[in-house]
Image (cartoon, rainbow, N blue to C red; front, side):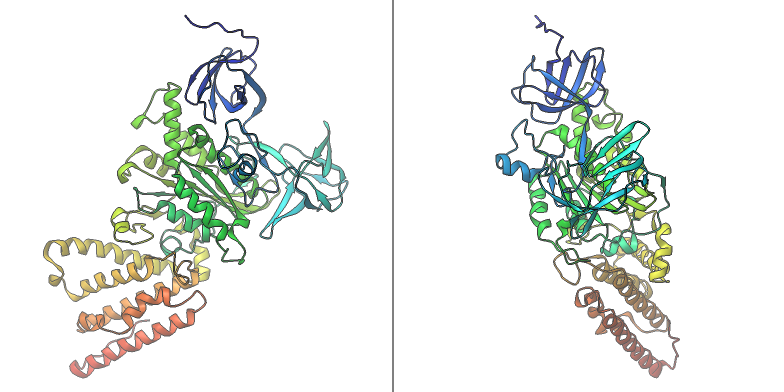
Length: 602
């Protein structure tokens, strides 16, 4: 017989994993945060039927039972935004893991309550506005040096505007102390260095901009062949062991974004442990400072509550939008959106929603769109250009790119870096396959590249064409062997191998190769393609391919990526000159024997 509950106060009547059904919730609102049980477990209202509400709990519900009290907060799930975010490590609902460790040890206890930002720490606030100034939403009233790499602007919250009635002098203040008072038609409002923002609500902007500048990652196959623009969205799909996480680590380490937000949503704990241990020891290549001074980590591993995994990407993207509003370029790395989608599937099953493809909820495309569309190049409310770039890893079961998460993701991104299992097994890293990948940003960022290297488009097109021709020739080679091919086609096979070994592969452990500047990338590509052009002309004139393969410059060309640093471009130019002289020697030798003159190529 069902137990009767008094409905004067909200109580739980049904518990299914992280899903709790409560009655007495007639005054509640959708997406309102509530506290469940005696421990005050954090939850969120996701369905309302009369006075009955369905609550999604972000913590472990073990030992929770019907009759547990429910306390409403009257506010949606929000994050704290202010100085102290950079360099911190959070879980999916913005609880600081270092703070929890200091408070209760290595394990997160249920109902743990730790402030997202340090409310006691004093920050040096420097005003940039004066009494009487009319302030619009998003305008800065002061600044704080958050880290040596981040100048944190204290901005008017998006919902406020008015005249400054009072502002403090330069000094030390905590994030909860008022630093200014704004007066509008509704009265006065105190401004502190911290404010809250709902995670599911995109922060407002003035307008969206066309993407015109690439996000430089230092990875040759990405920057040269498949670039992503600042404000763009990209996906890294790949099966188990193909290097999705490693590739994202490389991008997070070396991309030229001002702020890095790395979201580990549902990945294995040992992978996140590697991130947490490695990132604090890394050095920013641009400034020489620790990389953590411009990085925010959100860790929600596969053994953490599944509901918190679902909200973790919204926590990360909201923090990214906050720094974007300061006029900064932010890069968000989500690893992986497949684990996030699996959390949606599990929650949808417990909510008894009708399943769609492979059991995923019918709302999966909408949820993916809501995430990726929060990126982009924009003009902020204060009139500054800024961007949020999003790179999401996708883990299709068995490497099957036709599964729903990969297919729906392709609808909302313009850059697709397909990882290949055979390349990974052959120790070819990054294992991004050049024939299965694409970037629709290449045309958008070509004017920027043309300023760096006028021949970038031609070099990129020629190299990709060679790789495509090599793939077709390999099909013939597998049937009848390479010996039946003429030397002109075997040269294509040879040069394609040079491109793969000397350009596309990149070592994360080699000091000269882990990060490659755009200038070095173009210089290396020009070296290889000039070698191909001269070799093609020599073969057309009758020089056998075997003589070209025997040139001493060939292994030097392959090793140039590791032999020379980013500032040694003149040495690469010297190598190219030496290679051309060797090939000129072949031309002279051929002329002596055959009496044929070969025209030099530029």
